[in-house]
Image 1 (spheres, rainbow, N blue to C red):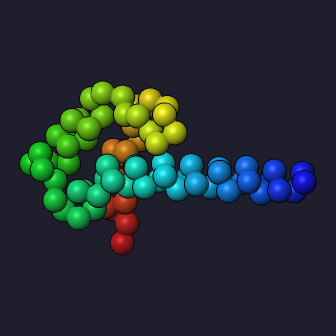
Image 2 (tube, one colour; image 1 turned 90 degrees about the vertical axis):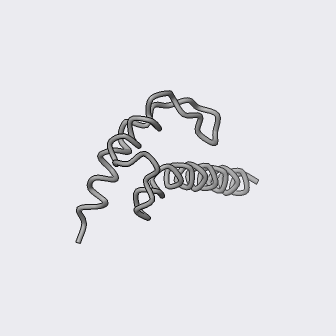
Length: 77
């Protein structure tokens, strides 16, 4: 019975992590695809990080690391 509880918790944790990753990717997808609607990467980041975002698990966060993540992602070979 304890093993089933642990498996369920692990599955729930993985589901939450996947949903959060998909949410964050949706934010950077226009940059990855080169379809930035704001004219520049910086303007896009300023707009999407101006207000806190509500993550799929209900938490509100400021996504300050998106700019650094995308900058590093674009600089990869």
